[in-house]
Figure 1 (spheres, rainbow, N blue to C red):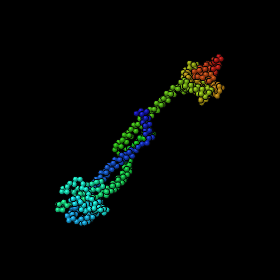
Figure 2: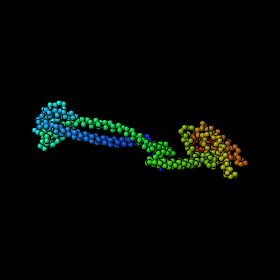
Figure 3: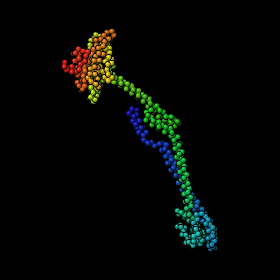
Figure 4: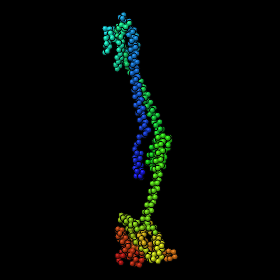
Length: 446
């Protein structure tokens, strides 16, 4: 897994953390409630339909039985043509609930006796026989139903001989109202059950999914904080528990990998700093070297051009250094270079930059000068510091310093011209007797 891949995963996790997330508990609760609700509603619909069908069948059977009993009771009255007794029998029978009409017809289809709910006129016309009744000779009990009522046609017989027909008409509205009432009560109960189930499911699923939710929260925190030392708690040895163990193993591996990577980066950074230091520092004197000098000079010139401030460059060459090397060896020469570098550094301003260009040559960058005299005074202090007695062991070293001085923008405006001007000024100082400084104007006059 590369560093760029990790950053990509971290960015994706941050985008997910900022977006609104749909809770797994809520999603599962909704799904379970949907399945539960559909199941309960289908069950309720089937039960309501079965209840209505059973109640309707029982009412039809009750109406047929009552009509048959009434037909047996009224048969003698038809034989003796006792209409008054027949009407009384019908009125006595009318106590049955939902009864709308009773009618007794002769074999010729005339109304023999009749009762109607609400005391309607008993002289109403005879009810028409339903299709399929057949002839009176082969007549049998017959029941018809409509949306709101049922009719039962029963033959009236006396000792097996057909003497007439009995028609019983009942309303089905009470049945419908009862079924609707039961349906309403059932719907309320189902609604209450679903509400209770929703609360229960949320609690149960929250507890059941708590380890998974905790694992998800931990993953978000790890992705946002990059803290791979966190670990999830394993609660049970189930699928979620095994997932948690694998997640912890992955965090451990990433933590080890990250520690190794950080260690490697620190080592590389340290090595890079050391290389950078080696590339820009003189190993003998500890001063910045020629490579650093070139870049620093460009930066100082750019700053001077931007601000309009006066700056200067000194080219410093040690006097008699070759003699020291030839007479006393390179070790003595190296000691002289280190001591000279220390002395010159001691008289500089904080912003001045002293560099060793190589051999016995040094360069001093003086940014932001108040005037030319400040640079000239510093050149004198440098020469004086180097000229002080310098011993290596017990031997006095005849070392001095010759300085060439050039200003920007007075003498030059670019690096090569300024370096050339200071070099010419240094040679003018050499010709003037060493242990002194000269400006580039002196070289031009020479």
